Image (cartoon, rainbow, N blue to C red; front, top):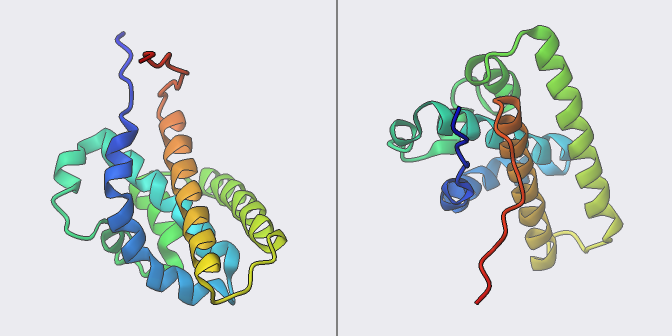
Length: 159
């Protein structure tokens, strides 16, 4: 069996579009539900990794990748929509995934809080977006691992 190296640039190329679309929902939810605001981005990363494996080129035909994921059942139920309809998890697997994502989101929110950044500032916004980006990459990595991809360190050519 040949090893296929996932190309993370595929996910990086759509990050800005996904994040820009996500921000109005994420920011609105952050004050009341910070772990949801941060955690849902991990679900987004997982759904995109699933689509990358299945039919990336066809999925990219959508003009707003995040909206496709959100609009299936709305923001509040996006976790269930992705778990059931994209990842095709059963109830037990969905519960385990929710627990994992919840723990990751809680750690991310605590890390943001420990920084004691003044809310509403450019620094706070940058820290939030950076946190979303890390959650997105974790979601991609978790889903690629779930699908059996093996990640390994590559030696970079020296200049």
